[in-house]
Length: 324
Length: 247
Image (cartoon, rainbow over all chains, first blue to last red):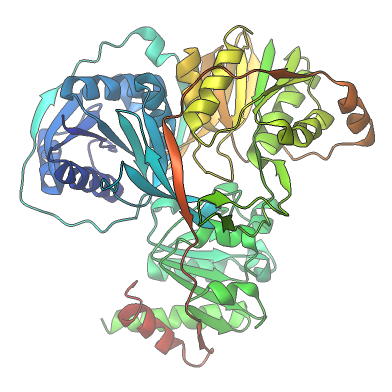
């Protein structure tokens, strides 16, 4: 019956979140007494695909169609549904990112499968098929029971640690039988941000709020982020004032992130902001107001002026790096 | 050129979340319900702009909800839109919501279906994609810009690690997010007009849910914050390394 997992790649290279996803699928497969089959859409190297075996995939089904280099939810959905049919899969796992979120609902509706979007746990099989997910933008969790025969899960990236095991996957080709309609979306322009860690995947994030007083003061945050290898984020007022681009906005109406470390500078910690970041494993708050509500949600705090504290923290990180 | 905008009602963003009945139900007592911000600020307002510019001829709103959803759909009508449809049922299962809307929409020949990128309560972001599949339409998720012309849409959308500009022939379902348009506030004229706009109540189709929420849980409370000063930041960095193990 197998478990199907979408293994996203960038020109044949698999990112950490994909390896995490493959391992997650392999774990579910083990619990259900079956194996995981990864679906690779587009061109990828044989060695890289076999390498997914090191993360628990037993088989790879590849659709080597160059048209799949651009996201078409219709074509991706068709390919994954075809893979599921071929393997008789009862569980399909996709990433909870822009690709997974576009494709998973199509697959689910096509197969009349119940879906949990943004899972943060493996399914509990002891009483149905119950998966934990974040709701109310991180203010709570829900346990959702999928009752349909086929089940679809999208996994929130950075939920589980990734570790390599022994193994190599066999690679087979899959021909889902596309027609022109599956590629009706014409791509006119692609602008990829290069050389930066995408915020949604970043393990370390440095974020700034109104307390920074203006976009001209972002240099100190950039220095700290650079020293840590962290991505930059911001609060809603900052994005609304166009101090920073919208894609950096985290919070209830912006992005939801769950990095290992979230450093909030000059952000008071309104409930809407906390909602987007309280899945972070460790939160450091730097604020000049000792009464800022964010301190209540923080693990570590520093009361002080950002312009003074942040450069000092950057120095402390530099010193730490030099001695390790 | 008809646009359908999907509207969900959600708890206000400042709501303190609590549960009742042994954590099996979301406690709506004292909770203010609002239009899901992504549906309102981006999907609905952009649809209205397209109508105002003459690119679209009609904007219809649809919601899946019981009568308690009417104040929210009236508020949406106060912003604009020609008529609203309320499908008289309630479900937390995204498939039921999508299938109910699809059942209604399939006979109506909408050229463009807009929804928010997700609702801020269950954060699924599923309904748009499911609708596209059920209506056999194309689907573009996470759009930040949308223009109409010559029987096609031109859309900027977020992709993994960047942005893409696409064109796609109609009909199409697009989920909308920040960048699409600026939020509006209903004016007095709009509020008065909304009172007399048609709000059709449609009986739900017989559709069984594919999932259900068993229980809820609040995240564990933080145990207390450790404070540092500008003079001992070395200790903070050491704690991030040896205690929190994040660097």
